[in-house]
Amino acid sequence: MKKNKDTYIYEFEGKLYINITNMCTNSCEFCVRNFMDGMGGSNLFLEKEPETEDIIKALGEFDLSRYPEVVFCGFGEPTMRLDIVKDVARYLKAKGKRTRLNTNGLAALVNEGDVADELKGLIDTISISLNASNEEKYNAICHPSFEGSFKAMLKFAKDAVDKGIDTVLSVVDVIGEQEIEKCREIAAGIGARFRVRESIK
Image (cartoon, rainbow, N blue to C red):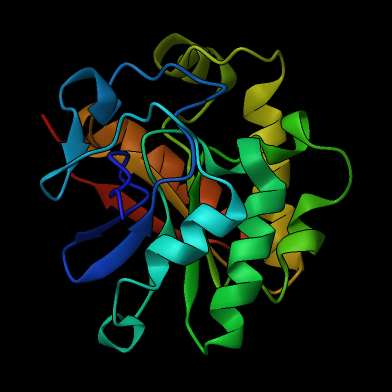
């Protein structure tokens, strides 16, 4: 049987990750894609983006009991392919696995409906890239393709908190301590946890 040359599943720091797409609504200046071809020794640029069946088949090659969490996070924005995220998450929850979605929080600008509500019960933790304390700074470093992205991201975060989903707002450590503290206050105001991510270069 020919092995698929695209990497749909990869290991990193003891967790299992799903590389579902290379598409993204943003072009963040600090994105790891600007500096590396992949993570955990895997090239994550895709020639063919996977369907649900491709991902489930690839997951079957791993002993899921070894991993405390399975994370939707590759070289793109997972919610660009929301239906597949939900399908695979249902499969993983049926297997008793904890799930996490790493996202830019712009799902509502890409998909119709109440996305946070659709993810309730399927995704245990949503980690959202906040990255800046206001719209002007956000636009300058994240270069979103949609107008109103900063406000949409904060609304999605608040919606997720209100749905009872464990919600984390994160920033990269390169934005400076003063900006980090402003972002910490935003997270607290929403009721989300806060995390400072180390820049990868």
